[in-house]
Structure formats: structure tokens, C-alpha cells
Length: 257
Image 1 (spheres, rainbow, N blue to C red):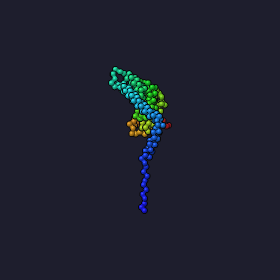
Image 2 (image 1 turned 90 degrees about the vertical axis):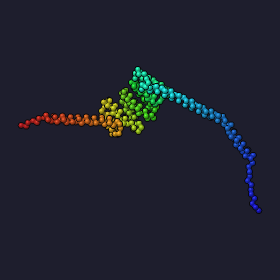
Image 3 (image 1 turned 60 degrees about the vertical axis):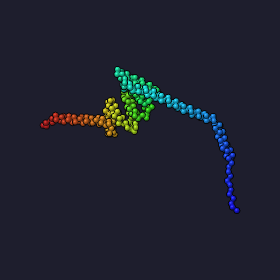
Image 4 (image 1 turned 180 degrees about the vertical axis):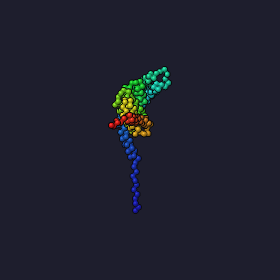
């Protein structure tokens, strides 16, 4: 007898519809149960987006206002498009006010730097030191301006006679960017020691600079000071020897009887 072929059972479309309706019903039940939570989450997300847009607009507005004040400050600081009858001191005083307003609206590295410079030019070294120190804390990553700030800070410390702070600040400068500014720090230390009348320390720094940085643009200054010292010692030695020779020529041996 021929083998009887079994027919595959065909699922009724009604059964499929029932299963689909059951799944759909479960989904609807899921969303109904969590509807309140979903509405809350959606509302929060919307609020966050709106808050972000408001803050972005506000920050941009502050940035523009602060920058406008900065530009006015630059003009007074450098005397650009300013009445020629205005004295330098008056310009710096006006620039100081504008940079203070700019920093108050929104602090930036350049505004804070020039704020310190205005105080420095006006001879208010205490406030200059204060603003430069704020810069070193708030804008530690500003590699383009920070080396100059350290130099200005060291100069302000010199003006106020704070020796330890001078050396500490130049030490920070020497360590910046893996020692890129160490030659500058060394020459500033040498000049500082010269200003306080310490030629031994001055020459130590110049010799260190000449040894470690022969390719530096500051090498010639160091070499010239070292050569001056060495030629001076040579001259002193020569004069001393010549003096001994002259003394020898004038000596008369006693006559032996």
C-alpha cells in the first residue's frame, strides 16, 4: 500500500488573531499601568531641554556682554581711538574699571590678565598680585598666557620685596610644560639676584642657563655676563702679578760685608 502522506495542521486565522489581541492587550495594560510615570519622565525631559536652551542663551548673552566690555578695556589700555588729551594713568584707570566689570559679568582669562596688568601699571602691586594669583588658580590650563602671568607675578613680588614668593613663582614657571620655560626662569632669577646685590647666585643661574640651554635666545646674555666675570678676574690677577713684579724691581739687596 502506498505510504499515506500526513497533512500539516494549519493554524486557524482565528487563533492568530486571538494571540495578537492578547499581546496587544498586554502592551496596552503595561502602558496604562505606567502612564503616569511615563508622563512624568517626558515632562522632566522636556523641562531639562528647555532649561538647557535657556541657560545656553543666557550664557551666550553674558559672554557677549563681557566681551564687549573687554574690547572697550583693550582700547583704553592701549590708547586705541581714545582722545589724545587723556593721560596714560587715566586710560589705565578707565581700562581697570572696564575689565573689572567684564570679570564680574563673566570671568575670562584675558580679562583677568589685563585686570592684573592695569593694577600693575597703576602701581597697585598688592591687587595685581591678587588678580594674577586668581588667574593661576582659575586658568591653570591657559598655556599661552600663564607663562607671562608667572613673569608678571614675579615682577610684582619683586616690587613688594617678597623674595621667597619671587623664587617660588619662578620655580613654577621653570616647571611649566615639561621645562620649556626654564631658561626664562633662570635668566629672571639671575637678574633678580643682580638687583639685590648677590653676584654669586646671579652667576650660578647664568652658568646653569649656559650649560643647559646653549641653543636658547638667552644664552648670549648668560655668556656675556660669565665672560665679564672671568675677564674681570683675569684682569685682577694680571694687575696683581704686575704689582709683584714692580715691587721686585724696587728691592735692593743688602751689601754683604
